[in-house]
Length: 261
Image (cartoon, rainbow, N blue to C red; front, side, top):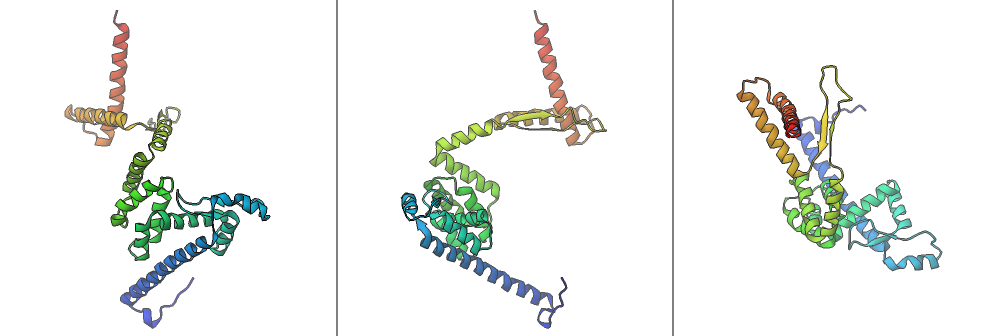
């Protein structure tokens, strides 16, 4: 694509001014799009008990569907498909967009106010909404209250910790189920079947916090001991050596136990 600068954009200041103006217009259009989507949702909101009525009126297969978290309104599935088409999105993408909008408007009102005031980008608000949808209503309100003042600058790690805290506080059963499920993903793999030409192998794993902290402390201490004994390799190399030293010490300890009468 070729583009010739006009006299109005012949300076850096003019170009930056044009970009700022365009970005403001884009932001305003995104907020307008949110409002129109909410207007559509109000017109197409249905009661969860309306499935029988849908069938009686010949709308076979249509049903109220949840697209956001607890307490957000339901919409008719076929109507959601029409919305997606109007937005130029696939059906799934349209439902995702609608869910984010409803999550913000009905469960995260403080964040919504930030978006409407131009203090929080829509994309960032949507990413937050994605995280809160699994929370109960009180959990979402908890996140909304504490996150709204810093939502424009908080890290995603901070958001995840806040969402986890809300889950533990307001839905402990689900939080415990998630913890147990996560524990089943623990592993520690030493890929001795994939030795490099240099004679090294890759190691990776996932541990619980207590085990990881103990392993880190042991590796760090052994790496320091190697340096004190005159090892001049880099810290990374000494840490790698430390893992081997720890393994050999443990094996020697086990052998000593076995040989004891």
